[in-house]
Length: 468
Image (cartoon, rainbow, N blue to C red; front, side, top):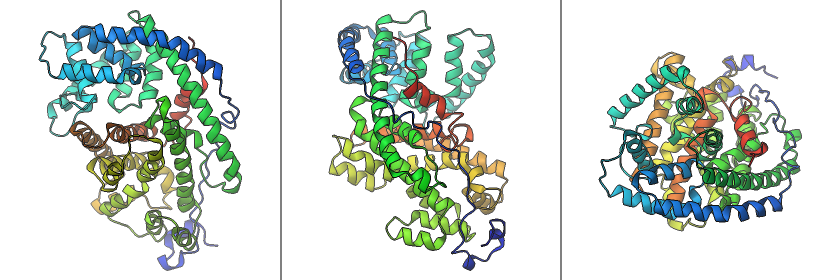
């Protein structure tokens, strides 16, 4: 058998029966702990009963608040993960707010108003949700980042922790449920906290966490039933990380079917991806591709035959292999608002779908190129770009980071522009971009190696209970 090292020098015609050099992946960090979780009906019942009177009081607060108080209250409800209980009221209040010219706000309230409106698809300025052509906002981000970084060591908690988190993760780009869990820990240490909202938020999170555990138990038993961890040892066992993507797409309780479908489809696509990248010969891949789409097979041919595509060819193919269409095919049955027009819109390759898929691909390439390169034995898109443009690896990675920033501006612009398609569907694309950024943050492959970045988030969301 031809060795991995000699693969580099082998003519393309002799490589059809050669396997790629096999990578070794760590086992799942979570073992079988989630398959043993049981759904606690009493917890759910107690949470629902305790939340109802608190929700009524919170709704009264929302309806009675004056303009300045209202802005701060909406922000708290959203950051505490409670906004879905008051969606209609919040949308009505924001619409009223958008039509009023009120210059009596202080700087904090003004900035908060702008952010909330842009997050809700109103075309107003917001630095961390900026789009192309807003150069002054680029300067604002650079200015505030510089000065907040300088002052951070002098601050005291909990303000210090709030600033630190803001520097680590722009709120607009953060996964809502992850940001909620982090904000809960900060808010309960805030001397100006509202005890009613804090208690409601904790009850709500406990309710959600209990539901997530039930879903995790269900998908874990499904996955264990295949025993693919034994049968396909070359593939990554990352079911729990896949479920995190489902929760990131929609965390609200009514989307159980969506979360489960995303987890299952992503794990299966991941296994298929590893089969192509890490095990199959070209001949085997050709047979497999007879029943699958041809995009992965094209990538494998580029890799195994050392055929260098142009960067543009790679990106066009990568929109398919990004798995965005697989994921949305899986989650559509769990959404009541999806119509034939929605499906037709997705299949028409609208700008927000293409921009989201490409940005997700660039983020993954930044995080996974070292693993996929395997010491120079395999081609990656980084090699492709370096050769085509005659630039260094460092310059290439900087370019990819620039493409990610451009992608965010494109996605945000499409979000603000609105479409005739249900907001729910477009929001899922935005959340897809968010979890992609979190997974591959700081050019790390958090999916393959979740211990540093994703594991703490998974533990906080699904394992560690919150004290009420």
